[in-house]
Image (cartoon, rainbow, N blue to C red; front, top):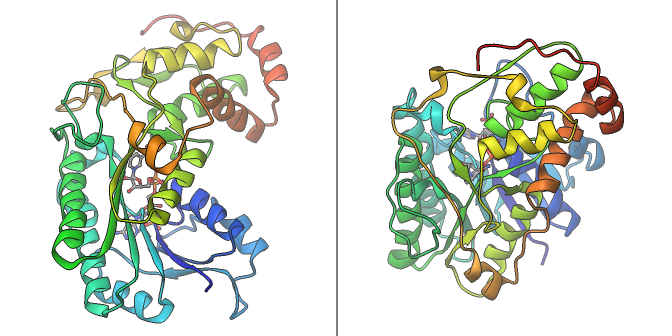
Length: 348
Ligand SMILES: NC(=O)c1ccc[n+]([C@@H]2O[C@H](COP(=O)([O-])OP(=O)(O)OC[C@H]3O[C@@H](n4cnc5c(N)ncnc54)[C@H](OP(=O)(O)O)[C@@H]3O)[C@@H](O)[C@H]2O)c1
């Protein structure tokens, strides 16, 4: 039987990589997106071209629906009849969740409940459900963190993800649903949103090389994170739903670096000293910080056979090369250009 996957958040970073992976495996894929005032399907436009979405048999289509709108979720479930549901949609920015706490909780915590409840009420017994849980749930719990580490969230985002984690487990325990959590540590890519620190850095370096920017403003450089590649993590997400039974898994690289390390690595690729280009500002400080996240993914390795392939150095290079290419530079050309730059000192 052909597998049918519904992906919420398909226009996001992970949604786009997951759609590619599932289509390559022969799935029929339906994504959902919200209406936006300006088109924002750049990450999946190539899939529309590849899998013509005007054809009734098209393997890839996108429908308007919203995690805050139960009827839209019920409609897409009824019409599409998925065999697997990947709930990746979220207000996914930790810092912004301090400013939009109520809607973050509505989308990230009540949203998964609406979706789980709609699947349960539909009577479809064999649907497999994946919830995009997050290492931010561990918050202030000291590293390394694994499936047994207590949650101590430090943001409305973290709290919302803890609620969704337990709601997912509850549907597994109370109703026997195949409902699993992937507790994913930070994962990035050239498709990462521009206001996440890693992408902000590589995008800004490309702007500096192109002569469009002098300095980057950043907040806490001491935050320690376990950064992997989104393309590797969607493979793990898929494996979580193919497992014989529903369960919860940490996905992480098991390596930890600071934002300062990320700066050193990316600027270093062009022979530049990051301190010449970075201004520290309190504007990006958060009311509560998560000091250190370091994942122990030994359960996923043992049970699912999942291993990340891309590590810190490769990830930095991939992201920087992507942003430079968008401005017409190879790494080599950017190095040559970097050697001619005169940094405007001060402000750091
Ligand atoms: N990337 C990471 O490091 C990381 C780590 C752990 C967990 N996670 C979680 O993994 C998931 C995917 O992450 P990502 O990095 O791909 O995030 P992302 O790029 O921000 O994508 C999230 C998507 O969610 C959609 N969305 C937001 N509100 C919605 C709503 N009310 N209804 C329907 N869709 C909505 C957005 O699409 P529209 O613009 O169409 O609304 C957006 O494209 C998220 O749940 C995130 O919290 C991410």
